[in-house]
Length: 455
Image 1 (tube, one colour):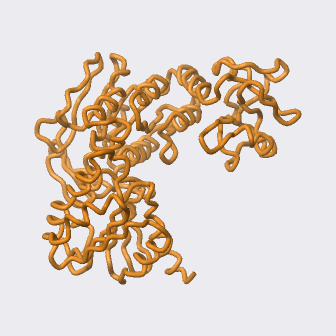
Image 2 (cartoon, rainbow, N blue to C red; image 1 turned 180 degrees about the vertical axis):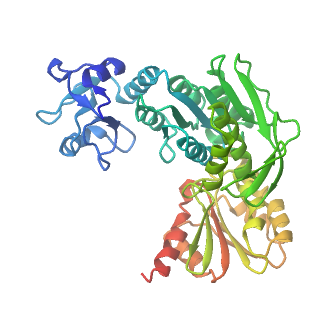
Image 3 (cartoon, helix red, strand yellow; image 1 turned 60 degrees about the vertical axis):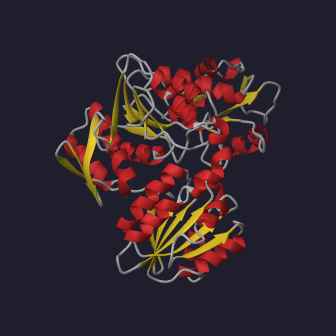
């Protein structure tokens, strides 16, 4: 199915083309020559460690219909080029114009310090049961991923579910302006990206930028917290377990929650999975989806890869939550573990550094100690392995804090460390892997899978 002509896309992106290329048909937009580019517009982006302009020949050979390049760049003979001043900025312009060309598309944008990917995947799963839906693949939540998500939408789609991330002030405002959401969800304001954002107040200010772009007919759903909501003509409502919230989760247990006297079966574990399921229910209802369809979607939702993903590997139960970590998500995960380990089993926690916390890093890592102590009172906690330099403060805090629990600190998150960790696990263990992305703690799971396969 053709997306548009190159001439149309050039006009949207504010670029120039050879007039003979104006009627070239483009099926989609891509930035990676390792993926299928057949009939697509290849956008050559520049970054600190890469330059897409070096791969024009590969894009042409892969079947790309044309390429968007920065002025002065030449491509292979016969390869139509759309020339722009700045390809990254032009990608945003193109996405904004494409969004404006789809007036029947309802956009749901989701941000938050934790839970945005799982909420996005769950809500997209629910929406797909009722109407044509497009959603961010993986964690496409920056100024490349969000435009690519928008550009994947077609006139036949009725809803787009987009994840919106940030690490510095102003990023969400720019992405929100391109998305023009009809519904905005803020899953949580927490200690994430403090190196770039500075304080919790600034995190809240940045996250709430997603609400400020809502039009009067729009609706915002925000996790009930202490920060004042922004002034806007749109209706903004809060959700959560707090009685002061506009929409309250009144009860919860393993695999279920209750809202307004109605019990919902949910596919995501833990209190945070339940709270984010409430945001999905509220948004899906606004889309006109019936409760029976929503219930089916929630019950059949599965955890996103590396986000509280429960897998049996050999004789182990491995809970892979290695995509990212911050204090709030770490606490939520620890509070969930008692529900996931058999009373007669052994629980092993492998926790890696929470990165990008700035000057508060040591304090925030030490702050996990009381939650580990509480977990040890209600679950068969056998050992805690702390991985990374930042975890040294928690290791010191736990020296005399968890009687009967083995505490191991591995300051170097290298391959040898991963092998040592994998070798210490015993059949029957329930193992949690959780750390920031930079620690790559999923390597432990990869080693366990290889051993189980006999490699």
